[in-house]
Image 1 (tube, rainbow over the protein chains, first blue to last red):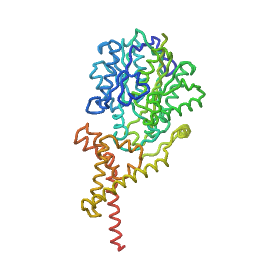
Image 2 (tube, rainbow over the protein chains, first blue to last red; image 1 turned 30 degrees about the horizontal axis):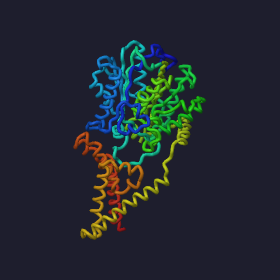
Image 3 (cartoon, helix red, strand yellow; image 1 turned 90 degrees about the vertical axis):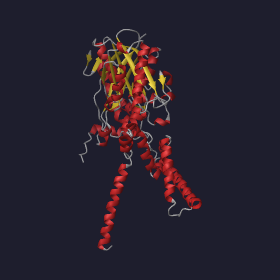
Image 4 (tube, rainbow over the protein chains, first blue to last red; image 1 turned 45 degrees about the vertical axis):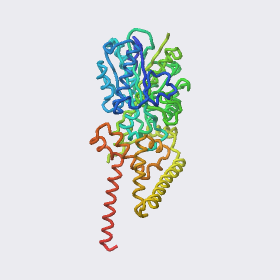
Length: 335
Length: 156
């Protein structure tokens, strides 16, 4: 049901039957490592290019989710997936292997929640029995496309973020036991005139704040309704800015409630500078870590606002500023 | 050139706020590290040059070339081993300015695009980063030469 202008309440609240998170070698050192399903100790995942490795990551995450749900690819009606590669090839190529009817979605790093929101809407409208939502990113493939060659020696500024190598997938169904997707708020594109691709956190923070504020208003909720609110990949810089923006708007979020997936995944590892980013960032943290905590009963209500920077390598060379977006999805589990 | 887009007051306010929260590069530390590492590279080059003069019988004016060649090879090797980018994160301009930075830009781009084949991948992308340096280097050399010729013709 549409609530307000841009939010959905899912009256049939689709159930997250299973979820999977896979990661690369660097992610294996993550403080959340215990919540991943599989790690690969080689950035190439046995492939001859980083792009192919990303396809494999995505495919493994989807297969793992199927295995955990005890379902076959034929049981899934639709796969919604997206990634950062040009023309979202990683998703399309993974869908080629999985043979599941496929809708490509793109919201840069907000793709995880974009896919989850649309998948939930499909189920809520009786448009499917099972839907899978997935996304992936690969550190070297993203660096190659958006920045410099991986081995190029350019010093990164302290605001730069580290693209997560990994993939996350969820399977949603109508019946069963598990966390439920309750509502979603689709974000507007927000551009505050930041043009530095090494400062994504600052570019994306206003979009996250806008979507979360809209979510509270439209769903008529108080900020303390949720046990945990996580933005997608603002990193340390963007998180600090978002906190300031919330305070300015008079939205009081307690520090132990509001967090950021881009900070959680690598902790304070100095190598990642301002934190993590990439489609897989919010996906692996949510589908691995947070859903696991929900199943344990530690969290009952969470809101994930995945953030995406909608730039292209060409757009910033042409001196365009970075338009950003955030989509928020609320997941509840009352056992 | 396209016209610069106007920044709205809301955007301006935000950018001021964001600037305050952004961690800055530590310029002084960067300068010191660049000096130390850049100096270290020059020291190695000097040792190589001495070695070529004293043990291989090179003239002092010619010993620079083989020394440079060795530095280029070392840089390409460290790039291939995946070490160079970590050195650069520490050393900043100290690893970018000397000849080894140029070698790294070529080697890293060549490695990166190996997956698209030797011709269009390696060949087509090798000069992706170094290309502008060569283009503008050649162009400015041309302009300077013309100025020199003109000055000589006038009788300078």
